[in-house]
Image 1 (cartoon, rainbow, N blue to C red):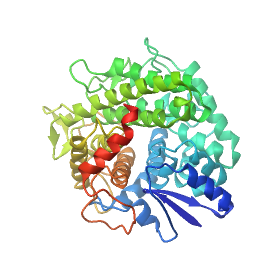
Image 2: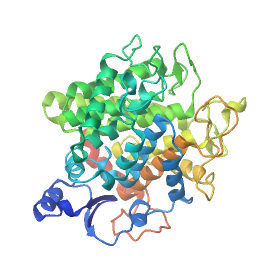
Image 3: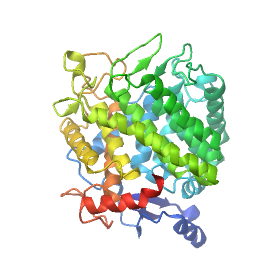
Image 4: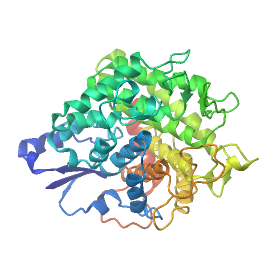
Length: 453
C-alpha cells in the first residue's frame, strides 16, 4: 500500500492500481497548489488528526459515526466522515472531479470509510422522496445521502446506487412540491421551506450536475439557493428565518438553520468552482463568475449576521438574536457548523473572507472545544428533534457531533493549505510546508483565487 499526501489530502493507493502508468497519471492530475509527498509511514492519526484542537476530536468523530438514527443524520455524518477521512473525494478538493472518480472506480467501497458508512444509512426500495431511504415526510432528508449514492454507484460499478440517485434527482426536479417562486419544498405534503434543506438538496443537485456535465442542473442548484434566500432571509437582518410554511412555520433566526444554509451553499460554491462543465465554454465560464459572486455574497450575509450576534458562554445562541428568554441558550451545533463555513470560505474566497473571519472561527472552535467532554460529547446542543426545546441537549446530538467534525476538518485543511495559522503545539510529524505567517499565506491564496472573483 502506498500513500500520496497532497497537503493533508491522502491518496491511499491499493495494490489494484499501483502500476507505474496509473501513478504517473495521478501525479499529473494533482492540483498544483499542493505539495506532493510520498510516504508509507503515516498512521491514520497523524494524517487525519495532525493538529490538537484542544479537545478529543477522535472521540467526537467516533460518536458522530455511532449516534445517527435518522436519514439526515446519516447524511450529515457521511459528509463529515468524507471531509475528515477522504478529503480528496470532497468538493473542496480543486481536483475533485478528475482524479477523484478514477480513484473511486478503482477501489472497493470499504477503502473509502465515508462510503462504507453511508451504505449503512441508505435503504433502497422506496419511491418518490424515499428512494434513497425513508424520509418521514421530508423531501430533502433522504437526498442528504445523494452525493454518497453517486459515489457508491461508481464504486465497483454498482448500478443500484446510481439508479437511486438518478431517481431522486428526477423526483426533486419533476414531482416534489414547489413554493410560488420555484423553490423545492422540504415537505412532501405541503409547500414549506426549511433552512435545513439547503444542506441536503442543492449540494446533491450540484454534484450530480458536475458528474453528468449538466450545466442546466448546475444552474438549478444555484437557482434553488437564491429562491430559498428570497423567502427565508429576514426582513430585519441578513440572517435567515428557519421555516416558511403552513405546518412548522418558524420565523426565528435559528443558529443551526443558518449553519445548514451557509454550509450547503459553501458546498455548492466549491462544486461550481471545481466542476469542469462550469468552464467548458465561454458562456458557462461567464455564468460561473456570476454564480460565484452571488453564492459568496449570500454566504457572507449569514456569516456577518452570526458574527454580529450576542454570545452565551462564548457560543452562538440557539436563536441567534434571542437574549430575552430560554430559547437563546448558547449551543455547539450552530456554532461549530458556522465556524466550519468561515474556514472553508477563507480558502475558497480569501479576498473576501480574510483574517477577521478566521479569527472569529478560531474563537468559535475554542469555545466549542471547551464544551466537549473527555468522552467526546459536545454539549450543550440544541435538541436535534425539537429545536424549540429550551432544555439544552447534553447526551450527544448526532448532527452536532458531525458539525464539530466538519469544523475540525475545515480548520485542519485551512492550516494545511497555508491560509490559517499553524497551531503552536501539534501532535503531527507531517512534512507539509507552512507559511511563516498567516498574513503572507493568506495573501498568497488570495492571489491564486483572484480569477474566481
